[in-house]
Length: 173
Image 1: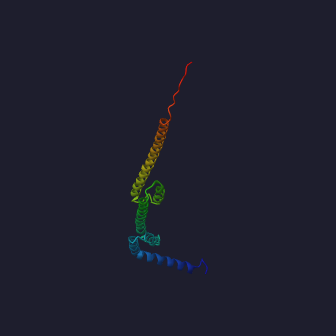
Image 2: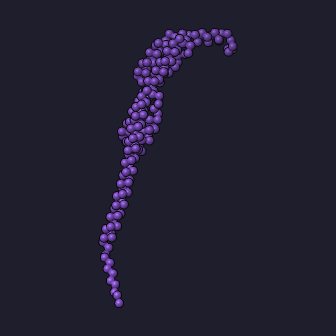
Image 3: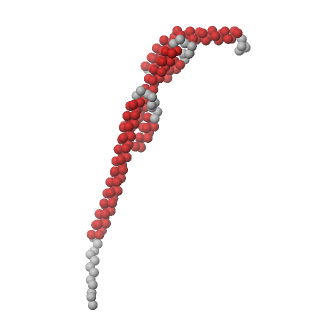
């Protein structure tokens, strides 16, 4: 078959017309199915369904609006999931050492998500806890150092008090 044959181009034009007609008729059903999938948490599949609608379809603009709407739901859901996992990890081990893992998890949250303010609030909470812990560790280290210095001073004083008294006798001729 020659690619420049009239029959082939007519067949392709007819196939394109039928595909567009199908999507023109089914656009409302496709959007409803996408809504149902999104309602079940199957956001990727819902977006894929909507992405199949060709630009030539009359409802293409509405389909694109629906795609954006479901994508926002997807981003909100993923951000909430990341936040929940990070909170669980932090609750299990709220230490500065674990804070790095928590922050790495939170880095996966989309800053454009409508619920990103919750992520930021949690980041601030973790940072404040780490600062408090680090300050406490520094204070504890200073207190230990002072206690060691005082203990050494007490040892020196006790040693000095237990030295025999030296009496010097001077004989003058």
